[in-house]
Image (cartoon, one colour):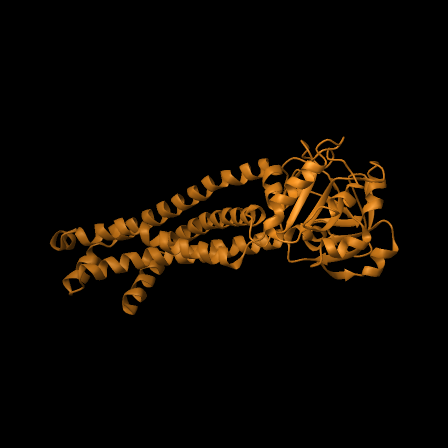
Length: 379
């Protein structure tokens, strides 16, 4: 078997140009496939509810864009009094674009004393917490956000008519925190000219995930007759509802992934078939020397597998590195989706390329073993 694998590799290296073009074609297809899989995985993590989810989002009823959702801040006390509620955090959100976009600038205003409760996982990697507390216009900017905008601690940053001082760069295990700028709630209320006491939403944490539906219904029932009625949903369900355009767009990419798979199969099959037809005599000689049909078939399948594997490693590796380097985010209705590839995605794409290469070689392998020996020797 090792001898056949070595022979398969030599057969590929004999036709360097054809092999190189096939590998580049496979790599292009797997680059696209890996990107699509990363999109799907990121969307799944942002919208699929789990048993550990305990956060509700209270939004203005029949409103989606943060600019149209305005709720009185004093709702906090009434929400907190509902049985099963652990904590309530008022949040003001300002974005530069409510539609689906690749470049979203998001300001999140939270009460200074509640920032650690809202995002306890954040770590300041540049700047200081003291600087954040000292200045009213201070902002803690997510690491990926700062990278895209070329920001560092001490810089001034202006967007959406709001100018802030970068007090620190933060890092979080949650991608959304790495793509926003946190500022003080009262500063953002004044800077956005909506006035004090008005927020975009409330994030409510419940005691247990089993309480989500009951608490959500109780909140909406409480404010049903108020001037500003609410619509309360689990955080991931809220994202799935408000980011409809984004989800539809990402759903379409499945067809691109399918196209990439078909292209890889076609490229490898065509290349291997040309190789098989170009060495009819060689295969006939091997069979004359005693190599069984299964050995010839294994040889051809190995060549296809090698083409798929090499192209898969190249394409998936480049896609993983590119998406890590660029740190793309997609936003809709004020919510951001960070597109961050996992190593497991690249490994899956590489394995898929190997399997596709072998599958694409089945027909050429059958052609190779079905040719009559005598006729092949005379060709």
